[in-house]
Image 1 (spheres, one colour):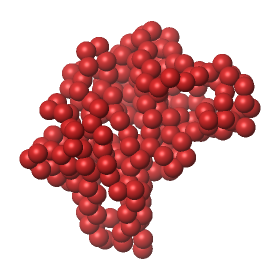
Image 2 (spheres, rainbow over the protein chains, first blue to last red; image 1 turned 90 degrees about the vertical axis):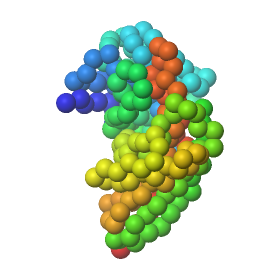
Image 3 (spheres, each protein chain N blue to C red; image 1 turned 135 degrees about the vertical axis):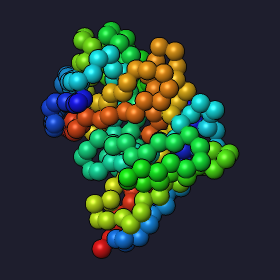
Length: 114
Length: 114
């Protein structure tokens, strides 16, 4: 069966510090991968998605970046965090076939920028 | 992208049937309608998906009228553990070399009371 992991689970970082969140998927190959952010009490905002190694598409311009160095690894980064970067970050994967594919979400990382 | 509109919150009591309606006036021909459930500090979880008419699974039913401009998620005999946020999503038309992108709105916060 497929599983998706995210770490760390929680993170407290000062403004201006760098960020690296990691997401890995097991039990599937060539998945589509997604990064979402959820501010407190709000819906999910799609940040990045990837259909393959090295292929990243950005949905929202910001000081965040994403990379996919391996097929089942997706990394969210920032060189300098802002207060507005606080939120709940969720990684998700879906199959890469035609038609609609259900997205499966990881446990999330709660980031607090102080 | 088809935008969705759903009530911000709803209250219910244990054992009642809950119906949450979502409007999606600009739904495209190839779009699917999907509902996710999210508990606090967890990633969303797929509940049900449909294209037209009615779909039923072990958790819920989804009613979609012929014009597909709205849909209704029906939860039979809710319990306290059904307290969560429910998101109505319209699956984007699959793009060439791109994943299926989902647009999450604010969701409906369902509170089930004893």
